[in-house]
View 1 (cartoon, rainbow, N blue to C red):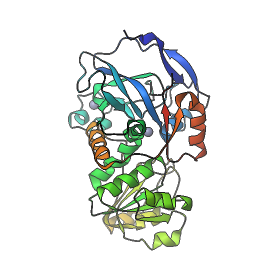
View 2 (cartoon, protein in one colour):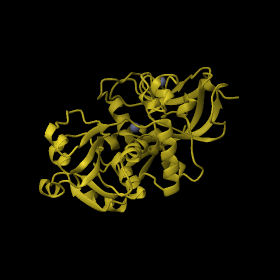
View 3 (cartoon, rainbow, N blue to C red):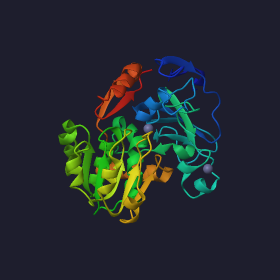
View 4 (cartoon, rainbow, N blue to C red):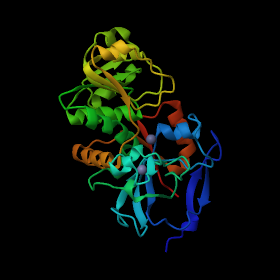
Length: 339
Ligand SMILES: [Zn+2]
Ligand SMILES: [Zn+2]
C-alpha cells in the first residue's frame, strides 16, 4: 500500500529563499495520471529562473525540478502507455488538454493549456511526481539512467530544432557551451553535422572539441566571427545574455536560420535586409512534443549521447542551486533522491 500522505518534497516558500524539506499529501491519483518515484532529477537553468522569479511567473510554494528519471509507482485507470515498475522520464511539461488543434496534430507542447511541470504544479525535487500519461516517457533500457534526466528538458530543447531544421550534411553552430549547448554539440556531432562551438570562455574550447565540435570560436572575437560570414545552415543559440546578434546572423549561409532556445530577456535586433537578401530566418521553440522527446531518447540511446554531469544528493539541493547560479557547473547538475 502506498502511503501517499507521507511523500516528501523540497519546497521553495518564496523567491530566492532556501528550499526546505516537507511532507506533501498528493491525494488521490487522477484517472489520467501517472505517478513516478523520483530517482534522479536534473537541475536546469529554468529551475533557477523560476526559483528567482526572473520571469515573473513563479507560484509559491514551489516544488521545482523537471528533468525526472524514476520508476512508475501508480497509473490511473485511464492512463496509457506506461506500466507500474517501468522506468520513466518527465520533462518541462506535465499535462496538455489532449483535444485542441495542437494536441490533436502532435504538437502538445504548443497547447494553449499546456501545464509547466514547475509552475502551478509539483515538480521533481521530491520523492514522487505525478503527470498526465502523455508526458511520462518510458526510457530505453540501454540509457544511462543516472545521467538521463537532463535529456528530458535540455536535451529535447536542442534536439528538436536539430531534427527539424538540420541535415547531416549541414554546418551547424552552437552558441553557448553550457547545460544546453554541450548537449547540442553532442547531438549535432552524432547527427553528422560539421559543428562549431561558440563560447565566451576560451577555457571551454578543448572540452567543446571533446563533445564533438569540429571548431571552436570565441563569441567575443569579432574578427573570427567576421571570417565566418555566410557559413552556417543553422545556428542554435542557448545563451541568456546579449550577443552581437548582427554579426552572428551574418555568419548564416543563404537560407540559414538562427534558432533561439536560450531565454535571453533583451530583444534580439534583426535588420530586414540581413534576412531578406540571403533568405534567412530567425525562429525559436520551447522544449519539444511528446514524439520529439521519444525520438530524442531513442537517438540518445542509439548514439550514446549523455550530458556531462555533476551529481549532488538531493538533500544538498540549496548548495546545488548555488553552484548552478555561480556558473561553475560543468555542465549539468543532477540531484540523486535521498529521502
Ligand atoms: Zn529545463
Ligand atoms: Zn491541447
